[in-house]
Image 1: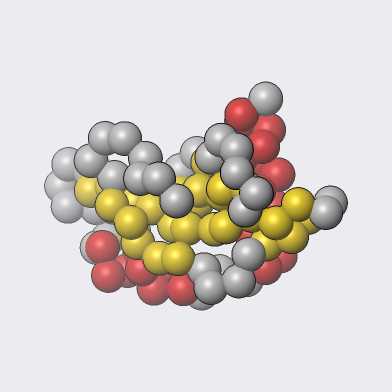
Image 2 (image 1 turned 180 degrees about the vertical axis):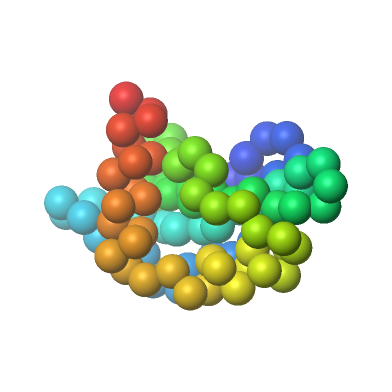
Length: 92
């Protein structure tokens, strides 16, 4: 998956693709440090068969990068389903 632009940092890659409506998506959590040391995080989806990436807006704000990683590792498939819908909606 190609890195988003800006000062974003890769936080976590989900091992299994998310499959919805017959399309498989890779899933990664990304984040960026804000002024004051807090971190915001979002989710990036990429079609496994190629195509443009889609990303959510900010999904969380955490106190540290480590806390952001902990948040990302705890996300369940049901949450990722909703995040994919939000990301596709933003891209439309």
